[in-house]
Length: 68
Image 1 (tube, one colour):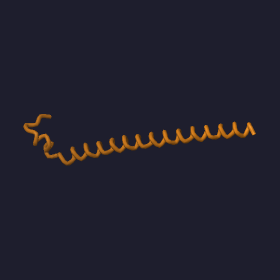
Image 2 (cartoon, rainbow, N blue to C red):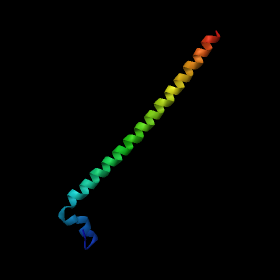
Image 3 (spheres, rainbow, N blue to C red):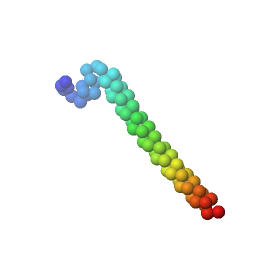
Image 4 (cartoon, rainbow, N blue to C red):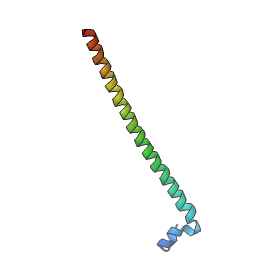
């Protein structure tokens, strides 16, 4: 599609509200997915770290129990 000026491009032949709102909604959805994925990754990493620390404490407690 060919536009004569930048303002014609922004107007999108009279359909600007539909075109730009769809771009905006799509971009918002992609950003939401990205933020949600990063937050989930951070939570999972923290859970794994806590679980590994717990297992280490359990093993150390078992060693102490065996020496008594």
